[in-house]
Length: 259
Figure (cartoon, rainbow, N blue to C red):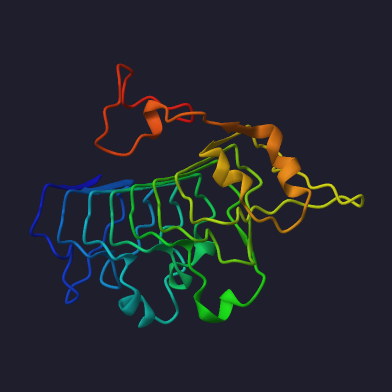
């Protein structure tokens, strides 16, 4: 396990003049490193065993990958993060996107959980780049079970405005206070009669506020009807979705209905 915490002067993890080989790390947690701008770059050997990545309170973080460094690699590292099962990001206010074209979404097919909260400038989850933005693509995360997006006031898209994300294993979707998000780009197959089918494993969708859900735009008119039976509209802020720093009440802070 790689664990870096409470290092306020840390600006980079590894120098670009050296390559670090890590062939046994299964979990990486980096938190409270206020000057850190990037996590991984070309000098960091692909973590072929990494399963869990946790990034918290990295107030200067601009990218999970060093985009300029990765652009120099030819071919792009096909195995980067391939075993990754879960990624958690919290209170990284300079981070504007999670995955980019250079992140090679196709290498994240084992990803099961994405949990992002309290990132003030997060605009996109999957950034496709200027050329791909104009295409209607079907992206796939076949093992994704849980997607949590909380307190992302600048979030405008999950994967562009016209592409769709196929998540046949999706069980839980939680979207709290992402009021700039106008579209949920889940791939919902259409029957001959025009009816949309929800993901086969879907069990629940938690939403706050309800007014946001009612304002969403849909690619097909029946998509809202297909997802509505799974929705739970939170009438008020339960303790587990309150913004960081607000009193959480008597219940345990680490409990969650989708944990």
